[in-house]
Length: 231
Image (cartoon, rainbow, N blue to C red; front, side, top):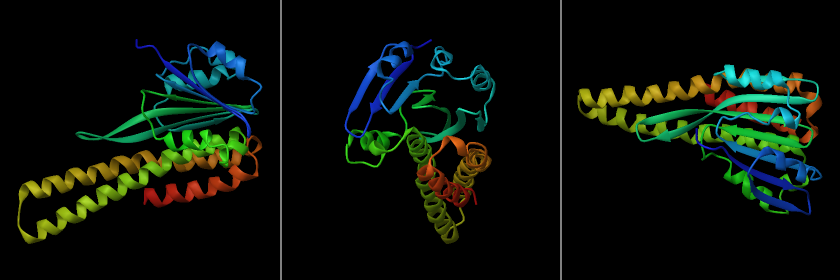
């Protein structure tokens, strides 16, 4: 098995550290920062229990394939899918999010994600993220995944419109086959998005105690984006 890759962002309004870690046991050295973000590339859950995360979470991660949200009194697990365009169409990848105290952990199947904007915001000492807590960081990460769905859907829609316009001008069996293939990509993304509506509902209703006013308000915006994308 390929060795997991662990990166750390630790920050406050005035200080910031970005580092590659050899193991999760190093996280304790940065515990005094108000916000810690640990990203793990590789679905390896060893060491998470030592950070205080529930064994129930880890059991659920190993068994679940679809989107889920599990809320406990002092921690939260969210399991969703990122969607990427690849050479032959679209690919779906599981991504897990943990929130406990000042710590946010993301676990991805492979390197490469849609979080670069979030990373740049953390590096900028004048950004909203730098003056916000871990709850807002979690919101920003989830929002980055959701916002990535929109250009994918728009690109597919534009491709279908062009092909349908061409199909009206000439009868072409291959053209119709391509239209159907692209439409299947739309269904693929919407099947990914639709279960997230329930995930976000559970976060807002059951996980309200884990979030301040700023993220609680912005969840509504993300839910609206999901709803728009799923129809």
